[in-house]
Image 1 (cartoon, protein in one colour):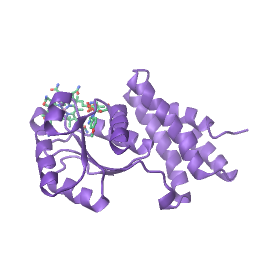
Image 2 (cartoon, rainbow, N blue to C red):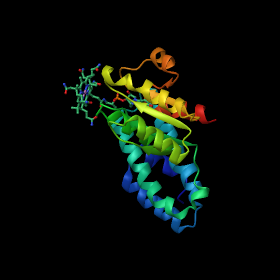
Image 3 (cartoon, protein in one colour):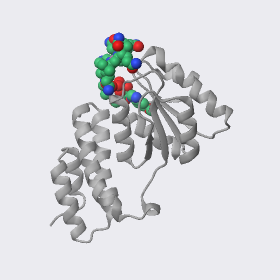
Image 4 (cartoon, rainbow, N blue to C red):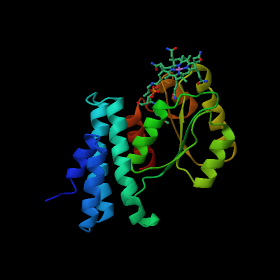
Length: 207
Ligand code: B1M
């Protein structure tokens, strides 16, 4: 008999077709959609996060897992009233102004969404005004900023200053190859080295 917990392995294997088939079967069997998310899809993604952190899974596999998980979420989400959707918090995220690198940021977005955060993705070349407007509109808990160039990471300071000037109560999560924990601390932000670190940090910031 098909069990919800079996879904986790399909996520870990990045088996999008398997996920789609089994989520549909579980729905036909009148399984609670929230349980499908929490006990199946999210629990699989938690394992992926751990494996990625320990070096047992690599970027392409994590991307496949996140894609498979999102395919399952796409089936289940319409069955759940918005207020029942499990959400750990809202994160506005972007690669900062002048910077076009988005592979790592997209991975962070997928992992955050898979973990249960609502993510507002501003894309690349994201400017101060976009961050400020999105935080206000979506009542975000966290701003996530990614930078891959030494010349663009300094822009994070401008975003933080603008939010402080606006009196916004928001926390800052930053990452990208040129960042370091020490530099991030100087900014008043928390650093995450990779996508699973970003999930752990975001969870700690919204706990
Ligand atoms: Co660019 N590039 N690039 N590039 N590029 C780097 C970053 C560089 C290190 C290459 C090098 O010289 N060795 C170098 C930066 C040097 C520096 O400033 N220190 C560089 C340069 C110089 C440039 C250009 C200036 C080149 C030129 O035109 N002369 C130019 C700049 C364009 C611009 O942004 N304005 C440029 C352009 C490009 C491409 C467009 C060709 C392409 C980007 C395509 C895209 O992203 N859509 C590109 C690429 C692919 C790279 C490299 C090769 C790979 C980056 C990548 O995707 N890594 C990179 C060299 C390298 O890193 N080996 C390089 C894989 C990705 C999964 O890792 O992005 O580190 P990463 O993300 C990780 C973590 O950093 C972390 O989690 C992610 C997942 O684990 N993380 C976060 C990232 N964001 C986070 C946010 C968080 C938390 C964690 O919280 C919010």
